[in-house]
Length: 152
Image (cartoon, rainbow, N blue to C red):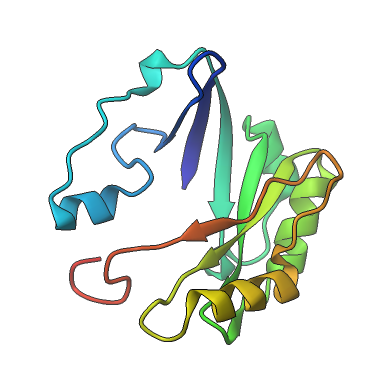
């Protein structure tokens, strides 16, 4: 999925939405819990950078093609719960870095299976650790409403 990450320097606004602007971070939780939108739209942003996220579902990625298509950052799924490791993580994480993208890793949370502390520890041990190289984004958490159920 293609994402737009937007920043406003005066006011510390961050807007993360998909290419069509109809799926912002936390959208599935807000829909199911009845929460209202903050009213912030990408048009309020002064700059945006195209990025993309990948998991094992996509397999090996042609990173040069993604870069040529305008993507400048990538988030790669590293782990899920406390047992699953993305078998393509090394190719996806290092490949994005190799073509000049800024990259980060994300963890797919399973709060129904184990504690947040044990999942965070597994994530850091399995590739999610941050490095101060100027090209690594902080780890991210993917938390979805009933991810394997009918309401996903």
